[in-house]
Image 1 (cartoon, rainbow, N blue to C red):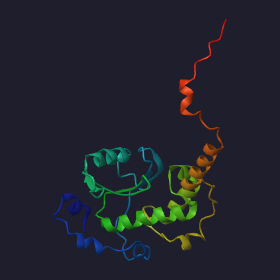
Image 2: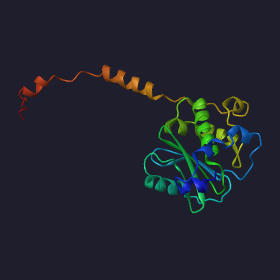
Image 3: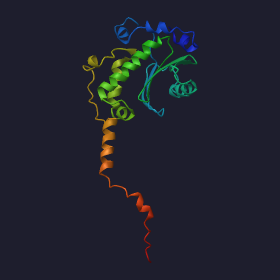
Image 4: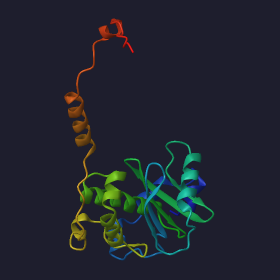
Length: 208
């Protein structure tokens, strides 16, 4: 199943995606066609957190093109499309955009599986997957991406296999639940507000 056929509309066959090679099949070298040109991780506001350009054959402003196109698409549509010969594929997780671009006719299901696995590996290493955790673990995330993709070709997307090659330690990041609990504790410790009866009390005027 080619990206151009999928981007063309409903005529694409969903069943064809299921037969696409898996990430691990590619890692074993059974599927070695032209692969990913760029990899981005974008924040919910569209700012770039991670940027890897493997081939230099896709415009540098591809994240902006992707975001503009995404706004045009109807809600519920898969973020997979072709613009000016460039194939865009994206997985969205916790508001973050894991985006891959390529000029090659790569099966979309394969790239989506790869991006999904990347989100899982990042979460396995840093514990919480959000913009703050990615920025705090900037060096570690780049190390993971470099191990998972070599010049745009998948190498390994298994957390267990990556342990032997990844040496940066994750920086501690508070989870959303912990932050919420801390906020609630501070609210309980704050002085109570005055009762509604206070509005009926006369205001004391200060004499000069």
